[in-house]
Figure 1 (cartoon, rainbow, N blue to C red):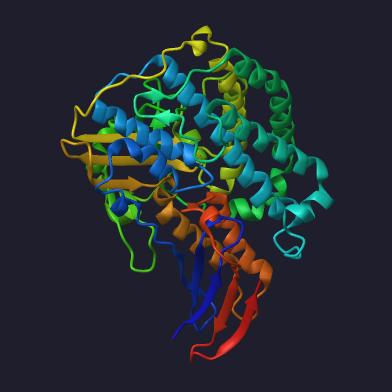
Figure 2: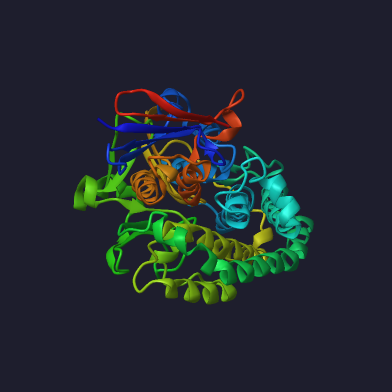
Length: 473
């Protein structure tokens, strides 16, 4: 007989999930499972729709990172059109994607995770939120709001809308960039770069305070997967797949994204609607990999911008091989924010960024298209098959957060074993379990689609099924 602890709902994430923790009679944690309880169904209701609707339709998967779906979907549609989109359109797509990465990373670090980092895992949950943080560290809150605002305004200024913009389209983008918009964004770069530099300096000095979490928050050997440029640099829009081992050695490199099904398998567990992708050559268990900012920094030789490369060199000194603790997703996000700001500045200073040639037009020339890009949370795959009329016959999506599903479950088990005490539950113990999920920053279909008031309920059962203790918040 085992006791069962249920955390429902997991808080401060984007979407809906609960956690079950199974405890043996001797008090040890036997197993833990993260249940993603939403069924979205995009792959089915896309069928029969025109392919050119896919960017705007699939962007509705998420209200936090719709730009990721716009980009991956449009890249798949580019292949169906068999067009070579204008270089300026590629640069503009890169900028808007980087703006999204900046705002999304700022959301997770400052809004969702910093209450744990600054107020403590055991702090009063009524205070352990953005408003409690505002009382404790008002400057950090203001910095987080400003960084997120910058990323959101990059999206809005390019695409005229912050959420679900229709500007990224098959063949390029809908309209060129105006000089006044470029100059406005560039004028804000010094301020936001100063904010992220200040945040990085504070965070690095505070790392010694988090040794417990660094040791237990999903720190284990795994593969790391993501896009890199031909030279092995950090890449978010285009490139090839690289797979790196826990020792930091390259297991596979320059894999064609279009051939993803040859090396990525997709498993399904009965206790979650979220798929469990894995690296096929090593099999379901040994092929567990991680994606997202931690993985991207582990697989990249360098970032390609001056200050981010300096930070990456420090980051890589954390471990002898790959950086294994998923707690360092927080650190990696800050470095990617810095990189995103620097790279936006580089792209905007290219004179060709104001070119009026930003879209290629064509009809259906291929019956299949695959678009792959890096979302804030990791590698995102869109795969469409169409008929001669351009109507979707089948679609397959591997969402960025799904790639981390196996590792996230392993991480929850690890932190539960180190934190849970079966004789007496405390809210802080359970918050540590939730916090390891927040480190991955899963976007589980999206909080913007939630309806009603969501409670988190934790129930602790004895081996005979008797309810011992219950908590709700």
